[in-house]
Amino acid sequence: MFLDPKLIYNISTYKLIENQSICYLCEHLLWNPLQCSVCESSFCNECLKEYFLKNDKSCPNNCINPTFKESKLLNEILSKLQFNCPNKCNDIIPYEEFFSHLNSKCSKVDYKKKYLELKDKLNQLKSEYKLWVPEPSSHLKNSTFKSKFHVHRLPYIETIERGGWLCNVCRESHKAIEKSYYCTLCDYDLCKNCKENEEKEIMNKF
Image (cartoon, rainbow, N blue to C red):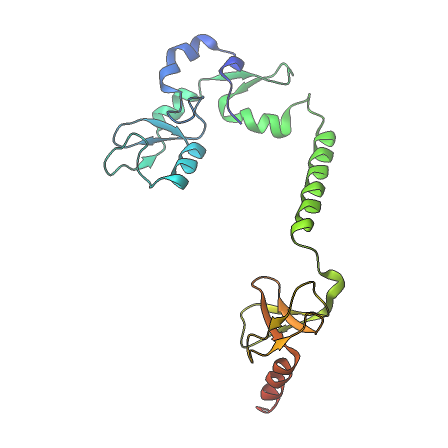
């Protein structure tokens, strides 16, 4: 979410600092800005993170050996800005409190409604996720097994919708309907025989 200059309350102050308050990447008002040590250009923290995902950690202005840090002077300039609430609650919001106001303080926001909307969205995302990753709860035993062969715990799968599988220890092939200790994190199979042999080996040490 961007800071909209149209919401600025003290517009005369903004006009004096406008050139220092714009992000060179998104061209909106700076938020949590970082400044290049070489060219002294300023960027929103999130804009810079997004830029680094696609580029190396160099300055967007191609500066040599830059570092990025907060500027006390720049933060002081931005702190002079004040905003009207976009929800028209009549509050005048200081720059550093703008988003916290919208998220939790605005008297015009129906937070119960907002919560229910987010809850519905989460449930929708869960439903969409299950279409891609069917939940195997009906196929799991309560017990899990920690094998010396594998770093994750292995739930006991009674059935699973897949083709034939290989035990990752003995390398024997099995039918899909055969029971398996199966890692849901990394597609690792341990057959019942290998699991029992491991338990016998452990017991023989005592």
